[in-house]
Every structure is written in C-alpha cells, then in structure tokens.
Length: 141
Image (cartoon, rainbow, N blue to C red; front, side, top):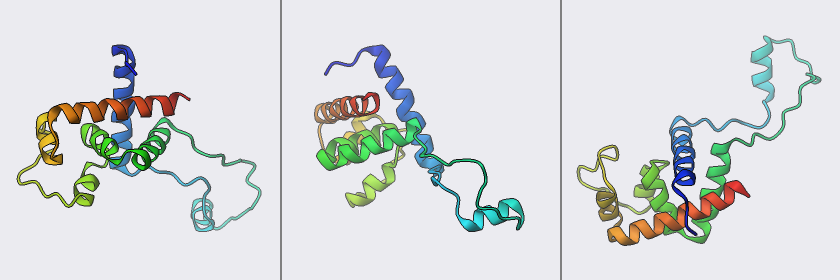
C-alpha cells in the first residue's frame, strides 16, 4: 500500500498524539466508580445522574487498539512503529531485554533505532511502512 504524503502527514500527527497520550497516561475509565462519584459530589450520592457514560472512542485509543492488533500479527513491525513515534519505546526495549548504552530517544535517528533493534535500516523502514499501512487501515475502517 502506497501512502500519499498528505495521508502520511496526517498519520504522523495522529501517531505523535498517540505517543503523547501514552506518555501522559490519559486512558480514561469508561464509567466512574462509586468512590469517585462520592468525592466529586462531596457525599451527596445519587445513582441517577441523568448523564450516560458511553465508551470513549478517541483517536488515540483507536491507534492503541490498532497497535495491539498489529503486535498480535507482526510484533517486529509494532516494535518499529512504537520506537519510531516514541509511543511506549521503553517497554519495547525492556521486553526485548535491550539496555543500549547511552541511547537517547529524542536524539536518535532511524539508523540508531535500527541498530538498537538489531536490524538494517532497510528492514527498519520496511517494517515501519508495513506498520503504518496497518494502522492507517485500522483507524480509517
């Protein structure tokens, strides 16, 4: 699948938002617990609030869902995508039991990230392309 530059830019923005979301830990619960409601209402508790709490379906959550599906099908591509956009990159290194000496994600290039994963730059880019196409298809479906 060939991704146009405009689509790639939009995908990159979505992936960067997903990385910020992962870093900040903004996964929100679908419903509030009893203690949260009590604290929010300062002890005045009513079961009928008049509001419905539906499922949260943000772009970041759809991207994370696509990342998990990608990891099931192709873990190597999922690792490359996480490392490329910085969404949970430390977990990738921990799972692979990699402790690169003086690796700084912010200053790293595709070449250094490929070296950390132990693959060539060409393989890194191919896996990145496969992962991007999978995520794009999943979030636009």
